[in-house]
Length: 116
Image (cartoon, rainbow, N blue to C red; front, side, top):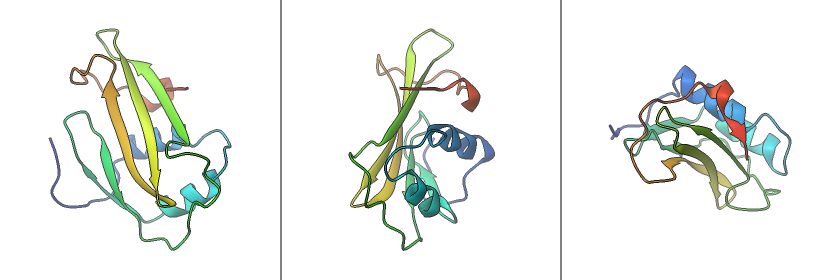
């Protein structure tokens, strides 16, 4: 299911992002600031999100396009990956995909996500 309109994060989405931001890394604090008051829309069936950031704060100290990521096994044992993308110093997308490119069967508890 995809969304055409931007909306607030759900509690599960917010918890997933918090899990990815739990450890310190270059640009983390700036990303946290950007996510305050942001809107999202679902862009694929796996729950990937596009962010609409209103904060003027820039993530100038991030070292790569994907400064944080995590993974967890789906109910079928295939690994689901969560990658937070930063483009032009702004959070752009949370990419969610499975290693075999199949559809996510059971969205995991955010606490089960391992940092990778």
